[in-house]
Length: 408
Image 1: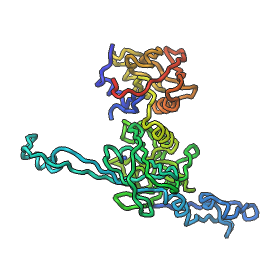
Image 2: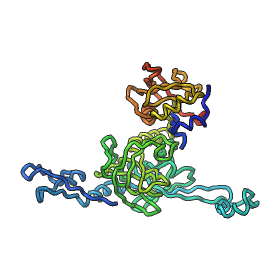
Image 3: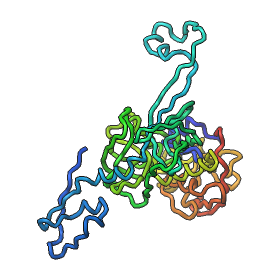
């Protein structure tokens, strides 16, 4: 028996694999003193050999005191600042002037808009940020910064401006790449996120509110935030959360660690957030940018299932819904609530009620883990998906297809 979207919606956030979509639903610091070894036990490394993070460690001047290097943020920014660019995008828009959309206008005229003569196209403009990936003029930014743009102008920190060509954009991850005709450009040093931890320094550079080369600092607040948690459920990214100030115009700019390596691309601001910003991990941004520069597009793997994170409360709701028609005994895991027709999942034999245990031999704790493993697997080879069905574990081989333009 089929499951209606209305009923499935009762069960919380459903992630549509291949779409990354959720159902249902963008300082101040103080240095903590630490107890240190006594002076004879202290091994002192010359400052010239220390990273900015290491320089924020013990200062042996008085035996038991720490001293934060006051210049480590400036040093980090100096490594990257010249590679950060401003992106001004403009597009021509047909239709009525924006004034006709004003609530006061609609109060008097309702939906009946007075007839207007043919009006010239109006131009919408927006500003974002980006950073340089290669000395020959390859740049990365957010897809929403250049979406629908007729003209993209790139301004370097030294004041030079170039018209940019949008090579490709991927709305699923909100990554776009731009090429400018320039050479011998400064390149942003890329870092990694596998050793990040909440509480580490985070530094953002961009052009918020049109204020070029603005630097803000904070900490890594959390890791692995899903697109649904961030409030942009149509994306397929697990975000870095930071309290470094990120405002409109920062989109596409780099997020740095204390050493000045790019660990993410600033992208999302929750409208109802207070001091929260989000960034795409640099590994995701770089992987997508490489595909865009190579082919101009990105094909995301698609299985064709809808799944939900299982909790005791969710288990009870599912078991009480006769139309769903499945009985779940497990109290945690990722349960499949729908298998779409004519999809790889259906062809492989997955069924509603299956509990996903592993993908490519990696244990999965929630739907975001499943999605991440499928994304990493790509389209070139089959995935192994281990499920629990009626208390028995089974393993299926599934060959993903490309994410369809229109989803069932």
